[in-house]
Length: 388
Image 1 (cartoon, one colour):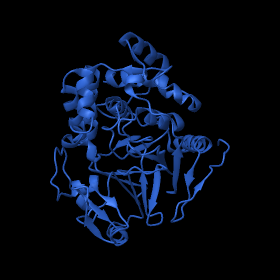
Image 2 (cartoon, helix red, strand yellow):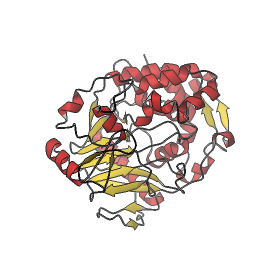
Image 3 (cartoon, rainbow, N blue to C red):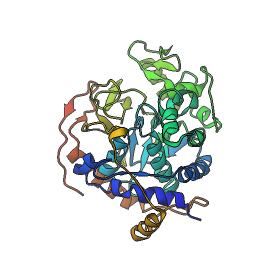
Image 4 (cartoon, one colour):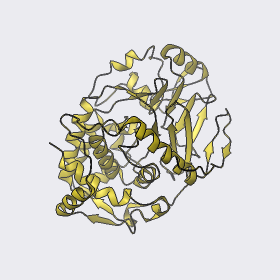
């Protein structure tokens, strides 16, 4: 049985996702943001949990794939990323967590990502960040956002229930370690991470999960040191070298820290930080970062242009009738995965690779800046490449 809540959400968001890249400024203005009923999102949460229960704590994902950092309630940047690169099933995405708090569209971000996860579970992967824990997001905006919109916390609790089943680590192309925060002195092998049991509601500060979602790289120490955040650790060059030796990894891609260009490197090209929420709080206009891992494992970094932040009180919204959704769903012939047995297999790998090459070229043509692979990043203009 296909989940109608998934079809409803994807159909409702289709007008926004179909915008051309040069019309992204119309998001939430000329093209309104859909209002999704609370009961639809609640049902969607149940379906998302069903999908996530079948996924291990340590994901193994092939390339090509886009990797997205913190979004923090910035729906505009999430939609821009999808508009520039297109949505599944011909594009694959890994999100590194921190979907909620700070911004004012946390519910919309979770709704769209959960719908895509349910529709295309082999093309959308969601990791857990430190803000996907209730003791954090009850204090930094998410709880207040839900209470203000819905008058209760039922949906807040439903979404947090989904978070308890999110995995913590993904290995891309067998050699790229992807995580929200960073590595831990407790990791002696990847098998340790496979033994983490879900669901997890809370963690101890000495727990490996705490380190995975809170830790940061640091030039101040070559080894591990307790973080001044109060949770997690900082890790330096020696720690990274030892981690690579123990795990056979070659790169770390993580999020968790706002960086001016949206992408920053540490220890040469061994560690990448990607932050995808532009115009972050007190950032003086940071860019939206996006990483693409090519089929052969090359890491490409992009900085999407800064756009004015869309505030919720200034956005336009629209209620979508169920009749309209049913009509549009049939007209668009949406390919939605079967929630119960995952029959949807998507297109062939070759077709997806060719499609993703075209999307990367699209981003190259539209992005203003990217980083080189030198230890000290140098900003370069992206060439305009011909579509393949």
